Amino acid sequence: MKSWSERDFEYIWHPCSQMKDYETLPPIVIDRGDGIYLYDTDGKRYVDVISSWWCNLLGHCNPVISGAVKKQIDELEHVIFANFSNKRAIELCEKLISVIPSGLKKFNFSDNGSASVECALKMSFQFHRQTGSPQKQRFMALTDAYHGETIGALSVGGCDLYSEIYKPMLMDILRIQAPDCFRCPYEKCRESCGCECFEHAQKMFEKYGKETCALIVEPLLQGSAGMKIYPPLYLKKLRECCDAYNIHLIADEIATGYGRTGKMFAFEHAGVSPDIMCLSKGLTGGYMPMSLTITTQEIYDAFYADYNSGKTFMHSHTYSGNPLACAAANAVLDILSDGTVLDNARENAIYFNKIIKEKFLAHKNVGEVRSIGLINAIELVKNRRNKEPFSPTLRIGYQIYKKALQKGVILRPLGDVIYFNPPLIIGKKDMDFVTDVAFECLKDVLES
Picture 1 (cartoon, rainbow, N blue to C red):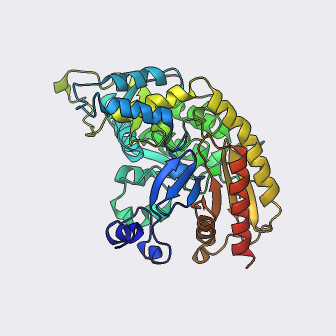
Picture 2: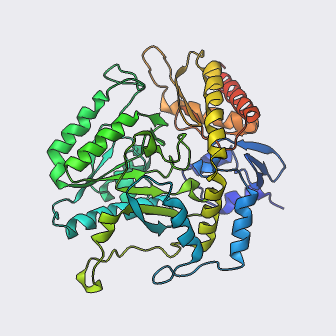
Picture 3: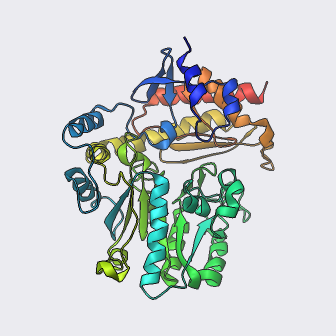
């Protein structure tokens, strides 16, 4: 009889994967999860230090979240969300309203992060057409951005790895040169600079502000670009320019929300609020696919009219407001509500960053260690002095990933950036273990 792995390989086309690689690294079939650990069908344990693509917020099979979903499944599994609603969705909005950035009032439900971004783009575009600014039809976004992989989301993204082949299909985006604090052309430091790099954004606003309806940004952390971290001041400056040119500021907090950056939402670090915020991933603790697009009363009011006015927002998803997903999301907020988990995560983040710097910075091929909250990234370079990157054909990160799997740690690097983005519940013992394994694997690859 074929193994589970062989049966998987026979049928399944995995995401973001070159399936030929699976000939030498077969699919690892997970049988169960417990906290930050996953166990495969052979009983081998793995530490999920990337939170299963950043969504597993509070550990696998969390008893509180599991209990909420089990209870809900016997009451109501799903109901159409047009002209109908459900109690769990209403409760979720009531709980979120007290923790989201000020000014955000109205919640539109979708079923994944890309859909949330599509919703935000369409919402902004239609708003301007209905409020006397029909010339505003374009979008601004940063270079190296990642916002999802549906066509609109892929358009505003700036990672060629995902979008290059599809460019004939994509929208023409106004691309702002993103901050690059590791290779800063102004020779400044992210902790003390005045965001001199903002001049690129300023010029773009001055030239195209009148025709732009929205700017979308990953606040403080460009994830798929290699966990690039930039200062909160940059967000403040974006807010000022968006206000000056009547441009919506869309916060893609899909990866940065729910305590990932040390605060509930990344925008809190900057002390300003977006006009539209996209949430997913940690929203349900990784249990169920769901997303939210949250916006202001002003934007909502522009669509509030007689049905025949043509102002209705004709955007929908079959699984919008799914009660099971909402039950999971409510349980996540219940767990976070007393602040204990977030406080512990902030305290542990200090220890995590400390041991990572102690273990990695002395290595000649470590260019930088950067961190925000529990997220830590280690950028590997061929030459530290001039920050020269390795050739992509060497696949240094992938080699480290394979070795770490053998030792029971899931890393999944972004190019040659090794990163840790664990569940908020990770403890110091596991921090020690995963950093030891990562460093051993790094030395095995780079010194062999």
